[in-house]
Length: 385
Ligand SMILES: Nc1ncnc2c1ncn2[C@@H]1O[C@H](COP(=O)(O)OP(=O)(O)O)[C@@H](O)[C@H]1O
Ligand SMILES: [Mg+2]
Image (tube, rainbow, N blue to C red):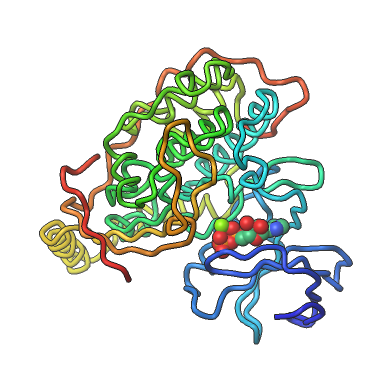
């Protein structure tokens, strides 16, 4: 694709804005509505179903701290989605090698928590919360983006996803690293890593070896924020520390609990037609599922439990920040590295996390009013896909 290419007779490409492992993102002009959009076009080798799911996931959301999707189509150049144009760059770019001022950290943390509260309320888990997926609009509002790994928490997807996890090693929750299905509390953990980094300029765990990094997330207690940056805001530091608990049940349960810990309530969410239908239909589908299908699923689960879950994750570049005394990240882990890993974990969902008593609430900064309301004993053996 090149500048001035026209997609779907409507979008004229202007400048390549970013490139992910799965896609190219262009700033484009929408001739029909006369506005600038971000046109995300799927790479020829990438997974079409995943891209369609991503478009549907974003389309089911409507929140000022979640990127909006305007259009989806499948053109000669490939499948594309037109997204709200976010010209302010990524949080990753703002974090390179430094902590952020406390007020800015509070503002961004609140924005992300309220975006997470919205998508958790809608029954979605993001599964790839990290600074490269937080973008800023022209008014400097942080937006949660890149729903390429997002999944429903209660649909059939949650069942088939058990044992298969994708995520980013530097931000991955212990349960995702162990091949257990992600829950809202998994997003809370990744949020905790992100908040830790904003407060300290460093990551809680750093090593050049992706497997060792996964192992640290699963088994090694995270350093406290205060031990790395004693000057960090104490309430935000306490929130990061609690979000980084190994046990999902010991973390704030979801985005709404994060917001509560920040002293805010999420806005009330009206069910959309789609989510209302899903909520009614899901149990009905379960009830009317044929006995044969149920037996087949049970047999598949037993088989999966016997042979061990198949875990795949994508390791995208960890940030350059390095905590004092830690080993630098190697060039190898700066790239996306797909793995398939054998675990000896039965593919079950962890018990739903309980709400965790929030740390001392902190009054929100004046300038921000968001609208938001196991670790298996075996080390996995990597096999490149
Ligand atoms: N809505 C947007 N506005 C502006 N730039 C964007 C937008 N969405 C993505 N980008 C740019 O494209 C990059 C890759 O986008 P992302 O959605 O994360 O793709 P991938 O799924 O391939 O990781 C981002 O890091 C960012 O630089
Ligand atoms: Mg991305």
